[in-house]
Image (cartoon, rainbow, N blue to C red; front, side):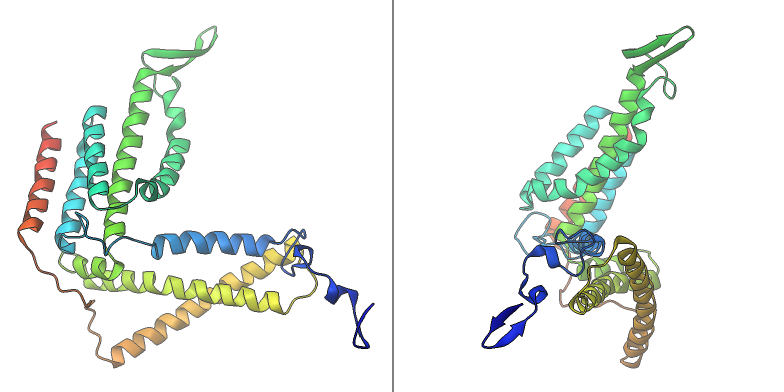
Length: 300
């Protein structure tokens, strides 16, 4: 044991560094709980609380949120209608121009688009092979008697079209989220033929996911501060499962309490924001542009 002013100090208190992290399962600084909690929290916060440039003086930011969402919805519909690679590439180039004009970094957009593209490619990649999409041979892989495995031209075209369509839709949806704050989105949705109850429930869901994430982080920090012996992987998994159930119960209690508090204060189901919506000439120009693209997509 060490000594300081005549007081004996145990060696395990003197020991410092990452090897003694209480939440570690293998002694490398972060265990099962911390890694999973950080990954989930980082992903949800990036989606629900992004560092969005919605207050910048960009192209889309200057448009009324109602017209913005309506126009982007028409462009998404156009991307679903288009059936040629060339026309989709032209629309994608238009989306990139809109992104730059809205002062949004291409890297920020790619961070949201690439995961969905990779996931989609993983699902549909087998469609390029002849046993799913036979046709013109592009690359022969295997030939055995009556069996011929190759990559077909039709398969490549189908996969390319689907990937471009996914890229366009995700890019447009990301643009709407990156240029519009969530309160304005829910307020604008009230102008569309959507049940008000659904909009209210969706807005409360987005708001309180962050609150529940904070509860999960505080719960883990409290457990970590009270633990000396490192947790095993099995113990960490069990504790994480118990916290998930605890958060589910907490969310139900929070939802009921919040609803009663809002009802007591006169809430009628209408989402209100500080922003005042007012349609101007540029808003109608944006809607006209989106309608033009949609009509052009129908003709193509």
